[in-house]
Image 1 (cartoon, rainbow, N blue to C red):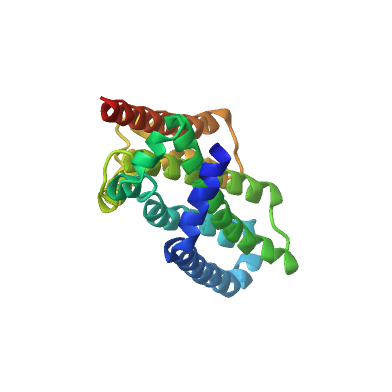
Image 2: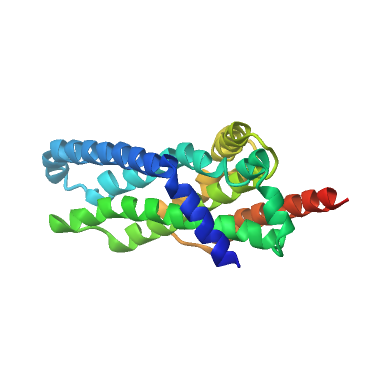
Length: 247
């Protein structure tokens, strides 16, 4: 049942121009940034060689790309998640789902699996940029793989938070703006530097170690906690609404 719901949601996403447009915009922006990084690297390469600098392609081209990808996807993913359940509420199709023998957790997981499939396409497109450099130079494969893993966990967290906020309103625009607000807060909450709690809450604090090639259980647990908590709150909210509608 979850797979059927996921396929239905995927068809809905890609039958409209929204998903295609967002993927195209993301690719164009990151491709331009990637080419700018390459041009900058080529211009300073003689100086790096003269100074015997250890910084290379991975540090000066690939890692800035992954850093930029996190922010570009923060702007794009709320536009993908805003309609996941808000549109169902707005059009009334949620009643069809409620009248069918489908539980709230199946609805949420079906929507989330479809979203992950879409985000997987985005991640693949991003991964192709650093992999293309293999034709002309060497890269730090371990660090690149760690960065891909970190970006995968980060955008999965973005999507889970967006899905939860889409459960709370029948207005897709409100869901998108709310998602932007929450994600931006979680991204910059550590900037004050006044509390260890704020540092722990920050998405950036747990994403940046992956860019340095560090994969540790603390960062993995943080992302899994964000994803799990967001999905559980989504299931609770949808189940609550189903119980209220049944009265």
